[in-house]
Every structure is written in structure tokens, then in C-alpha cells.
Amino acid sequence: MRSEHEVNRAVEQYADTVRRLCMIHLKNYHDTEDIFQTVFLKYVLSSVVFKSAEHEKAWFIRVTINACRDFLKSFFRSRTVPLDALPAESAGLTEENSDVLAAVLSLPAKYRNVVYLHYYEGYSAIEIGSILKKNVNTVYTLLTRARQLLREKLGGDWNE
Image (cartoon, rainbow, N blue to C red; front, side, top):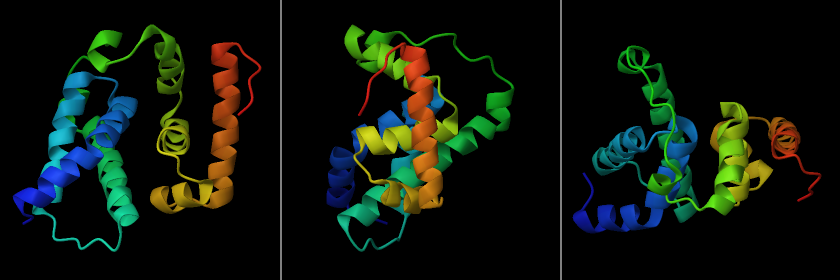
């Protein structure tokens, strides 16, 4: 079990990343908070020794994605009716970035993950490949296809 100091540091450092990943997958503030607590509880109970800060961050990303997937496949989730929409104010969004976020959230999960890790977390395709356990060329393909889908959804001819 980790010390209170370690846990507080981790929460301060990774809270935004974990919440954003949860929102991308779950699209629901309340479910996001549940998974947020689950991820940090796993961290508290984990005995993993991290080799570096990047290793620790990758662990948080992997555990968050897995927790979201498990939640979406759970018996509870299959027996409930999802809320239709999450108001932009409760997610801390402005009108300017809510259209882009809505477009990203509407992407299939395989594209959402790589877009989030590349554009929001700043990971390279090689790093994304190791985090998601995918071939680097697959990551490049997913990014290319995601960009094309976003162009179509946002109605623009923009480049990186």
C-alpha cells in the first residue's frame, strides 16, 4: 500500500488525464467519477514499482482505459439506460472547444484513444503503440483515419 504523500502527488499529477480519458470513453460525468475513484484505489493498493515518471503515466493511462472498458462491458451497464446528453458546463467545456470535443467523442473507440493520446497528452505514435500494445504502423493508420473522420464531421479542410 502506498503512502498518503505518494497518493496525493499522483492525484495532483494525473487527475486531469484520468478524468479526460474517462470522459472520452464513458461520455458521462458520474460514471467518470466512479472510474476515477476506481483507478486511484487500484494505485493505492498496487505494489508496482515504476521505473520512471513516463512508466507511471503509462500505467495510469492503461489502467484507466481498461477500467472504462470493463465498466462498459459490465452487467450493470447493460441493464441501465444511459443519459442522453451531458451538458457542456458540467464537463468544464466552452462553446469554442465543445464542437471539436463532440466530434472526437463521436469517433469509434479505437480512434478516440489514439487521438486523445496524440493530441491531448502529446505522445508520439511509437509511445502510443507501446501503451496500447499496437503496431506503430497501425497507430499511424488509426490517426490518419481519425483525422479524415474529423474533417468530415467538422466540415473543414484543416491540416495539423
